[in-house]
Length: 358
Length: 109
Image (cartoon, rainbow over the protein chains, first blue to last red):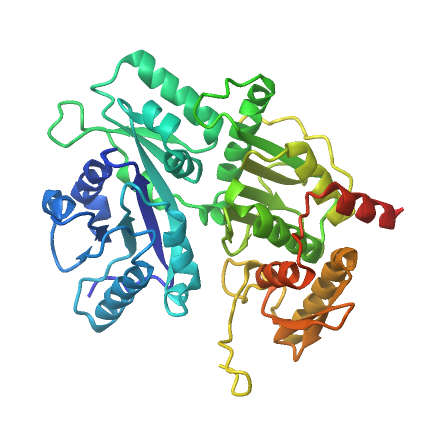
């Protein structure tokens, strides 16, 4: 027998616009021997399970969801498929998998998929959210960001971004897309993927893409530091006047610091109240917090209305034991959010410490 | 499930997460959990006062939200609290509302 299944199976969500290369990415991932223990759930959109036929590996672990758009109609079906997979693994009817990847339909707001994982009374004891991987098409990506709000949202909530079709795009277009990513989601690492048949398709680190996730903050505090460094490095950008017609021009990333430990109850009251009223426009929030009464820092990580279970980090990422929060918001005033949190916490905002080089 | 009210238990909201490996929880033991609930209620009441509402514990498993005019509702967790509060107050409870912030800032002075 192989190793026992992990207590909480991490789930990676692969999202991206229609035709943005999600299937290409999945094919690459499934071809990688390091990910042989990854089960895959594919959402079929339309009458023909086209995506399904394109995948190389169709076995008992690939379950085809039949009823269209993942975001609105089949949260129940997604939950059923995952429960079924879980129970078949427990009975030994499928090979033991240690990770699950879900491919969402191109138009889907990925958010309800994440809530299904949190809300289902069975699933939440067996699965946890790993990371959100968003594919972005280097040829059409900029136009999609201009025209479709979902596309901006998919990009903003990504933990990792994968550029596809870079072999077909002009270098200038790729550079412009990188600039757009830096504004909408500066902290997400960007990688590129090409189809298997492509001459330059060899170098691709599938393991890193799937396995380094939010829970790593507990293990790898340098990862957390890097991510704040990325946010801070791009912060001055946001003071420039934006062209309102540019993709996601009303999206802003900003940080907040507190030198004193904060009260967990006050923070909870504030963030739940903020997300209740403005969750749609809080594309993401991440924080490393000094909580009164806790020796080690606590990492919080939220996407729109959803906040993941807070993670106990083993150590501080650097010498400055400041609470720090990064927000990516759409159409909300950073200054008002700063003032609001300070008022709720009854703490003064601190000046950010200098960024230590990663 | 609660046999009296039929409510499904175990909400596991992030502000009140169940203690398990790697997850931050201030409910490691019953005493700590009670203390955290009391803190949470006090903290919420500081804000709810601006809307003439009060939150109280219900059996250590839920909360009761009451308005000045005596309307009341059960609440499971903090996420649920704000949707119910907005319904009872018949207006949005917005933490970015400058009047609310001015009030909170003044109360600290």
